[in-house]
Amino acid sequence: MKALVYEKAHDLDAFAIHQVEEPEPLPRPADVVVDVHAIGINPGETFFRRTQSAPPGHRILLGFEFAGVVVNAGEAVRYLKVGDRVFGTGDVTRDGAWAERVAVDHRVVAKLPDRLSFTDAASLPIGALTAWEALFRDVDELPGHVKRVLIIGGAGGVGSLATQLLKIKTDAFVIATASRPESKAWCQTMGADLVVDHSGDVEAQLRAANIAHVDMVLSTAKTAENIGWISPVLRPFGHLSSVDGAGGLDASALMAKAYSLHMEMVFSRLMHAYAPEAHSAILGAVSSYVGDGRLHPIATTKLVGLTPETMREAHAMVESGHMVGKAVITIR
Ligand SMILES: NC(=O)c1ccc[n+]([C@@H]2O[C@H](COP(=O)([O-])OP(=O)(O)OC[C@H]3O[C@@H](n4cnc5c(N)ncnc54)[C@H](OP(=O)(O)O)[C@@H]3O)[C@@H](O)[C@H]2O)c1
Image (tube, rainbow, N blue to C red; front, side, top):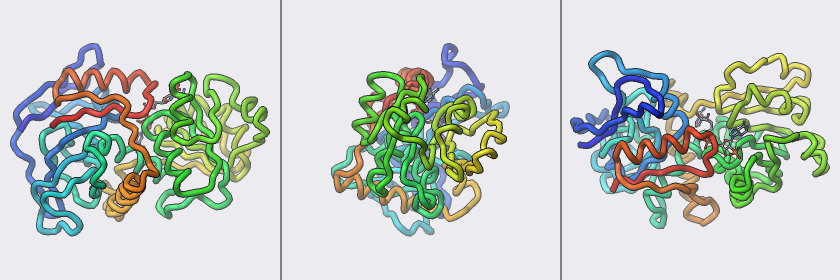
């Protein structure tokens, strides 16, 4: 089968992801093998490409989210069968989905509604799972007394789905941040009640809207840099949830207001065998919201063909740091 791989970590201007012929993936007992029809491209993958090299003589095959058709199912697979249209995440510890086929644990995969195309479906898994866990943790609901949520980076892959999930699952007032006309407009399309500009004085913009504080901040970008204005707008005992790793964050900023820091890592369940089937359940809920017309896919850039050229174009867009929605590559 065809796959896109690289050997050494490299920058965009020396883009070295290339096409190879690979053996078909070998499924484990709890795996499905999926004929990949479309893949979403994520900042995490561009981070791997820039920073992680394969051991000598090996290659790295990335690909954290896909949509396609089940073509093989191991003996321990319970919820899925050959022929099912599915979407899901890859597994960061294994070969990913930038290939014609991927083998993945069926507990992080769910069926698609009939009306959803593979291309649109591939825009959802990582953003939806990350947003869900960052907001609702492992209890599937917001922390107590959270009525106002501020999403930093509202137009990105995670932010777009965070806004939609909050509007579907809760009665929270959702404030999204965006710095450009197109990202601001997109946040409104996603359902934000208010959009503020993260390149300006957020505290003043909230005050102008008669908002003294928020109960929760979901930060998808530059958490450590933005902490100077996050702390003033977050109420005491509030919640800061970070999906960007919050590298360099000075945790003493949290103490004065006694607020909680939540960290999200979408592969955590699978890596630690901690009820990974929760992902299938969350994706199942997402699938039903799409089926009901309540949740909208976020594929704004649709590229065609599993080639180094389409992959480079998607990486360039994602690495700009100013994505609106998601870049998806349709493979077949
Ligand atoms: N922990 C996990 O499991 C997990 C899972 C998925 C993603 N992630 C990480 O989460 C982050 C977000 O992912 P994503 O897919 O949503 O990224 P994305 O789509 O690339 O996010 C782009 C958005 O970030 C906004 N942004 C850029 N600079 C900003 C700043 N200084 N302050 C506030 N917002 C800013 C942009 O808004 P404007 O263009 O309007 O400025 C843009 O809409 C990435 O770091 C990614 O690696 C983590």
